[in-house]
Length: 289
Image (cartoon, rainbow, N blue to C red; front, side):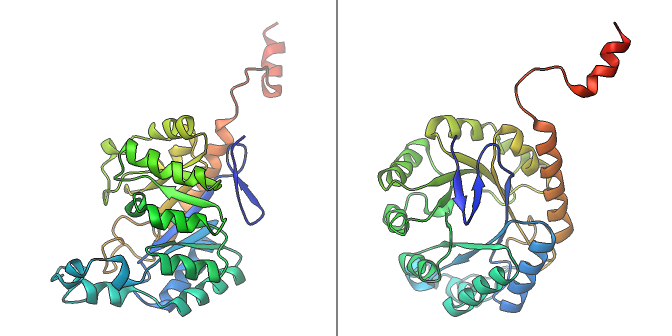
């Protein structure tokens, strides 16, 4: 049976669904807000919080960084100023990792560049996340593999052939990995979700598979376990009305708790494929003899 292990927890079929609160940039560059997001994620029942760690100058092109960036969600006149405002320092991420440990919730992150990947190894994260944006960044994937930690990789905006190449790197390095079905549209329309891909990924790559959802609400993500998802990741915020591009389609704490509750209910009703006479049916069976 395929599984990966994060700390002492097994993830895969037959084990409880691993639910991740994707903070991303929803801390708005404020470490106190980031800590409150960790608090609320824990209270909402999340198993983990996930952040994004990046060296702005090395992970984006200079042309992109120099471009004007003026819209309702902008924190600067250029894309560089915007990203710099939102980014926390390595020291602050180290503090958040320790804070999550103190609050008994897993902490991990998506490194956008090799320096950030090395930093996460230095603070001894237990698992790495490769975003859809980096699925074709083979040098980064190869470097992350070298740390010998479990890897969760999203598969949005990636062709089948590109995903084959990326998975081959994971396999070549004997990495323990999981793939997340994902559609990189924000928010994604329901007609584009295509949860059936989860089974296809599991059958093709013989690995743990999950779902990273960008649609509105909780039900679609919770339903992904009926298709075999062992990991569910959803964006998390304190308030949908906060300034920032990801807040609108993120789940607030009460919504995230609803997601966790739905997942637990759906886990109960999935059962298994073995047909048998149930004890709860015996009284009715005897009555009809």
